[in-house]
Length: 165
Image 1 (cartoon, one colour):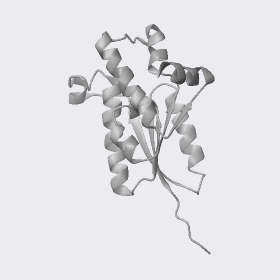
Image 2 (cartoon, one colour):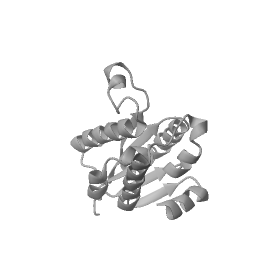
Image 3 (cartoon, helix red, strand yellow):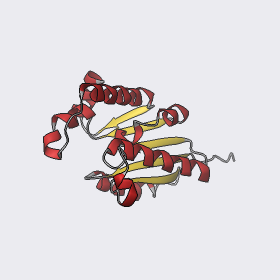
Image 4 (cartoon, helix red, strand yellow):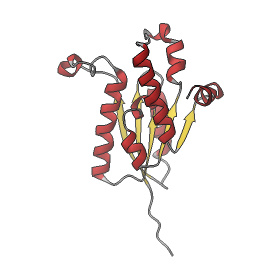
C-alpha cells in the first residue's frame, strides 16, 4: 500500500459583507474533506487604534486586505509548507504577485473592480484619478494572469474578466 500525503491548502478569505457567509460555508464544508489539510486566514475588514490612522492602510481596503493576507500566508507557510492557495477575493490577492508565482493559486471573486466601480455609488465607493485607476487595472490584470485558476460567482463576472482584463 502506498501512503499518500494530503496537500496543504491555505484558504485566505475576505471578511466583509456576504463574504462572511461564503467563508463560513467553506469552513464548514472543507473541514469535512479529509483529502486535504486546510489552513485558514480570515482577512478582517475592521481597523482600530493606531492602524486606523496610518496613511493608506487605514483608509484603503486593498492595501489593508493585501497586507493582512500576506502576513497570514507567511504564518501558514511557517506552520506547515503550503502546496496551494485559495484566495477570496482578488482584493486580498492583488498585492501578492510573489505568492501567486510561488504557489498554485485559485483566486475567487464576486465582482471585478470595473463592475464594483460601476456600482460604487451604492457602496460609498468613488473611483480614483486616471493614474490610480490605471495602476489598479494593471495590478488586477497581473493577479488574474498569475492565478492558476479564476472562479467567479456568475457568468456576468466571467464575461467582465474576459473583456475587461
